[in-house]
Length: 437
Ligand SMILES: Cc1cc2nc3c(=O)[nH]c(=O)nc-3n(C[C@H](O)[C@H](O)[C@H](O)COP(=O)(O)OP(=O)(O)OC[C@H]3O[C@@H](n4cnc5c(N)ncnc54)[C@H](O)[C@@H]3O)c2cc1C
Image (tube, rainbow, N blue to C red; front, side, top):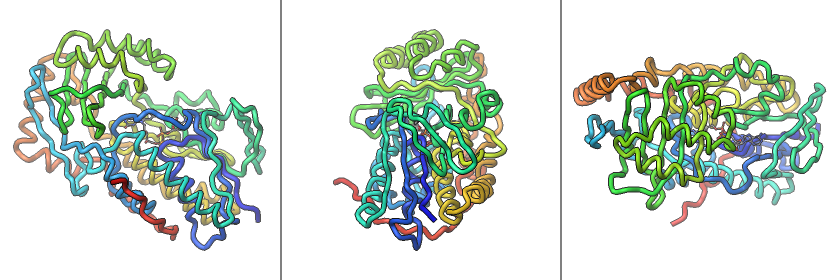
């Protein structure tokens, strides 16, 4: 039986982890390991991106990949979350649980997305080099391209790459291409995509900016009338902070400009200025820096809900098939679990991708179901139309956190990152990745 040929579309969080575990299959000769190609549209040099977190079983999986120390050494150092008012007075302080046992708003592993993707990609390259040195094929990385056409005939998936024009055929194609997955639309049809992508009536924009004297290792969260908020966070990079703008129940212009994708950044920034440029709190600075930002990212806050994550020989992974939305705090942990379970399933059913996809879905469904159940009132509970609503929210959360109820609630209502355990597939344990000193 020839080794499986697998195309992974997307080298974000899930893609390189899937490739790494596939090459760590137990009791397999290097020449029998799958032949893997990863195609990434963004090219080799990606922006640092914004703060994302790894929680619970996600931490177990980075340990299995031998990158835990490397990742922990590259975290942003965030101490916790503070709710602040127009005068920058702190109303609520919710510190991070640095043991990782309680899922607080700030996790014990907060890291910039680009830094994490770099580490995960580097790890996959190292594992691939090891396989090549032992006579295997390893991973072929295609940067700056994407799949223009995708067809399948039951035995193979045939693709045409947009930039190179090259046509290739694979046994399996994995769509790990994020929330707006093109692979999902190509395999499952464009028509039903609006039903799969559940918009949570919220828009998020992310970018980084130079740090100011008011920035610290605490995440500061300011709220404005008409259901707006701004979060300023430590980035872990000298002299830089990161920003998240949230609009809850915005008008339809906000969704219209989201559809323009990264090319629509000028229209998206112009719209955000209409919402935020009114001189409150640190809005002047935040808006000025938004204009200058070259790592600006704007998207709908949405979940992807699907009954099945595979069609024929195409399977969806991470946000592409089961996005839980950034406000769930579970996106990266879900992506890591998905990559691990898909690799486990393909390793144990190398001759039968359909059986592998069924096993993958059985392993993942319980975790996806709990991850997609957002705590009641999220995000409306923090985002009010009037200044009275905001004032009451601040008092209520101050009372909840100063009485200790908030910490107790986090124990039971924090992201469900430990609820579903990690299955054992017997993957080889790679050496711990070197931490630069
Ligand atoms: C630029 C960017 C910034 C983000 N910022 C945040 C953030 O600040 N906070 C947060 O919680 N989450 C953020 N996310 C989402 C977060 O990374 C994911 O929720 C999570 O890590 C799940 O990982 P994933 O691998 O499924 O998807 P992602 O990490 O999103 O990876 C998908 C990858 O596929 C690539 N891709 C997309 N389309 C194609 C295509 N057609 N062909 C080839 N490659 C393609 C993308 O460039 C990306 O590298 C961001 C995602 C992106 C792409």
